[in-house]
Amino acid sequence: MRVLISFAALFSSVLMLQLAFGGVVPLDALSGALLGFTGAQIGLLGSAHFLGFFIGCWWAPRLMGDVGHSRAFAAFTAAGTISILAHMMLVDPWAWTLMRVISGMAIAGCYTIIEAWVQSRVTNKTRGRAMGVYRVVDVSGSFGAQLLIAFLEPAVYLSYNLLALIACAALFPVLLTKSAAPATGTAPRLRPKLAWQRSPLGATGVVVSGITGAAFRMVGPLYGLAVGLSADRIALFLSAYVLGGALAQLPVGYLADKYDRRYVLIALSAAAMLGCAVMAMATQGGVTLLFLAAGFFGATTFPIYSISTAHAHDFAAQDERVELSAAHMFLYALGAIASPVIASALITGFGPGAMFGFIALAHLMLILFGLLRIRARAAPEDRTRYVYAPRTSFIIGRLLRRKPER
Image (cartoon, rainbow, N blue to C red; front, side, top):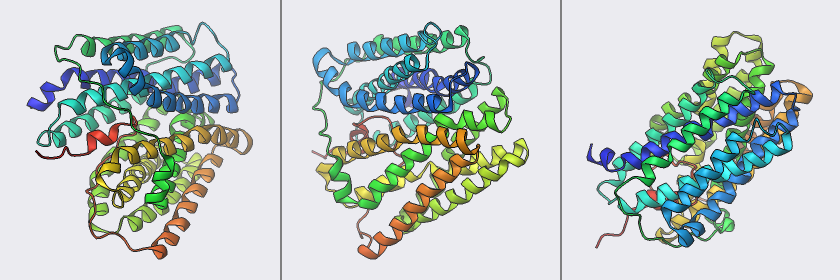
């Protein structure tokens, strides 16, 4: 309980940031469709988000060093709020693309600063509980952001204004906290080659995770519209995906610690392909089948990032873990930037089920590569413990790493 109270200000800001910037994602897709944007333009919005996300992850540690944690947080939040408010002032797909770059940069920057703040205050005794609460807050915010779409009317200023107000409210807990801001640490070096050197399968799994998650979360509303779902049901559809992924973490984590992680990763990808087939065929079924299929799809795809990173960390030295986490985030962003544009084009050209054919192909490649890697080398005997790894900032590795005992 003390851990929760100690980090209440920071975690409440995380919750509001997730609600605000997470809510923009499906709202933009629904609003763009109503305003006559093409599928490719709506997909570009999703790609722009992850481009901005990468920029924010890279820039935030440097900005913290120049102006401090509080000012950097205020600057990122203000930029993101402006990008939300400007939507209905500049109704143009290219303008919205720029706004989504800014909002993606803002959420990544805010996450980086909050995680640096939390890292400075946790100890080895409180780290597990603090990260547990952080994960619950992060997933709850993501879940709530999808549900918000049931109450936000697309392409209406009031809807964007409400999200902007929530984003503004995230400023208060951080700026008014009595806790002193920590000293600014050095930014982790970005070495994408490190991820491939330590585990080619881990690096590939991270890219496939980016392809899968970005396609579903950014273009999922288009799929929902194409199969005849209303806005409130699209909200439940997206929420089922998040809920399925959250519920799968504990059982998948148990399996990943007990068995060879490569086999668990291959099994999840095979199950994800089955989920893709169900989603493609569910267009002819009822709403209940769609919701169940979305939950199953989330359960089979959400944990792939964490298993891939855990497998890679099994081969890493202790002093490489922060840079390895940053490299994985970079690879995830690469897959996530490309995926929404491809998925939206496939929906436009071949129908709603085509998006899941694209995702299934990515998982088939992961299965084949996984089988190849099993033949290449044995699994390590000394393994790190599986943890759910949030895809939030380049410095998340510092939060997941124990401090050396003195």
